[in-house]
Image 1 (cartoon, one colour):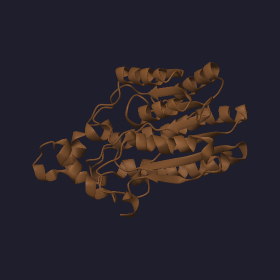
Image 2 (cartoon, rainbow, N blue to C red):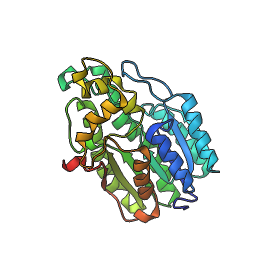
Image 3 (cartoon, helix red, strand yellow):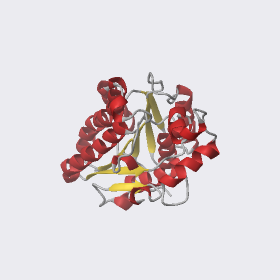
Length: 280
């Protein structure tokens, strides 16, 4: 317990899914939280994004752990907005020690040449430019504070192993690896560590409420949305371990390790939490 006590963690995409799980897990271990989410849908994405009510639930879960939380509706594509929330967080908490650049979307149906320019831009802007906006805003404050820190960027299995129908998503997530490696080399002298996590499919809304993706996985159903059991059957062969997907908390446990002093000499790591999918 208390593996990140006294630290402040900034988490993007915090209204639900992995972001909410990270907020709760880090709060359980003593961190105060800065929670950021767009709390709005992106047109033509194919499934709903987090809401203000869901962000409020993240606030409730963190406060239940007797930790402080600053929650703000900010789009990571908005660099000025990210800078404003970082400035506010530093004024409120005295600095930021942990960054979880987690916000993500996926439009998984089109083949590479069928992706619209709108959806290509949305995915690269959220998951690559948005990560850059996040670290651009926070790194100078971490350097100025002089107490090191940990930056954890959520990439993906497909950031290391491209798969059909995920070209824009894969491009963004692979780009995150390059960004993280460069940043790790630049900030090491300040005691700041930078690592990426690479989950396989995770049991969150981005998977379970994404009907276009589900139909793609079960094209044999003639356009019908599969049941959870039918979808699980289609997902399971992706992984080496006999499971269709992992839980968000499984990723949060990896994030906690990378955020804590237990990983004080770990930087530049590409940590897979993928049930063996990378080597299958």
